[in-house]
Length: 259
Length: 259
Image (cartoon, rainbow over all chains, first blue to last red; front, side, top):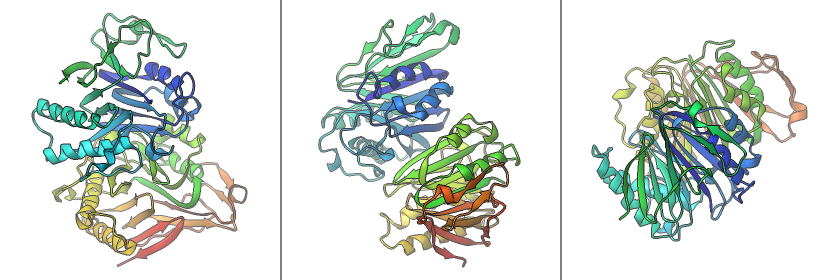
């Protein structure tokens, strides 16, 4: 199992705190030693860092931990390889451009027979089931909508429908973003929590780091964190249900569906 | 004018030496203070680092200078903004997937009227002429070839033809790569040199760094560096001609055309 971490915020926020906890699991407190990657959105801008080595040993990971990148949306993934060798092109998050936005995607799980699905617009660079699934989902969206649909709900329903279809092939816990929203689909394991005023202290589960959110935030900040497993011990995480799809925008749960 | 730096090598090579010289020009010895970016290929794998601040002040640039990423192909760009505001999405190199490969692109120059060209497959995320031109070139290739042509020469001739067409709109010095080859088109200013045995010392023009290549390389290494202006004082750089297109593969000049 890979580990996922996502963030959605209404102000550019530094994810270092949550990231520190996650990194320990990449070869430290967890078995996810086959690389890691993190993608940050800054407005429409996108930057990603990938390293095909264990995150606890990664110089790039250490650098990012100490270097504050303030971002409104983040997707992070720590890999335990199932399918596909350990190399950069098999390291999540994957990204593709659709409708003039950079979409990014990270996945936890295995999918049986995904490569039988026909790809029309996007082709995988690596050999993972995950990137293949991402190419298929995005290609189907593109086929359905030549441009971004004006109704958000129509788009969200389509993404949900496509996620459900892929999830029939195995385990499909995903984080996906198009810079505007963070799309989260769970079929086995994902938890989330929203932090907003009044802020309290939080203690990381995996690393000996504690941050007093009162001194780090303003009263109007809203930040949601999504992770494979709760990252802190003293906050109330909500576990997602099987088949649940949630859209987070600007830190808030904007829409969800469990059908 | 922006600064370009490219590398093509037959073995994974550390570009830090050439990169150090270039970085000084981003707000140090040069006026290119509006961000910088660098893309590395490791096999088919691609990773890029972007920072929308001056490279001399960039923490990410300092990190990469000290952190050895061994790569077979590199594209680097230091920006002096002409069109488009200073932000991540306007920072070169740009990338898109075509035929299951990550293509990347960096450009020096201004193009008048490029946005009148119709885009079919790829849309820009930012507002630069450069990204628009890249989207157009890649979209035209995709339209012409539904999959990667089996004849390299046919592909290269098409890329060259498309470059010539864009170059009619202004200054179009570019570096482009698809992981296999480095495509270089010059219509005003680009120089290159190939380093191979017997290796000598090289002294950087902009930074007080000198590397003895004899101790850094093996006899079979072939490394080509392409830059807007020669980066070293004691090596023989070849200046490209107006309208010249060169394909570098594995460090060697594989094909060129000046028509």
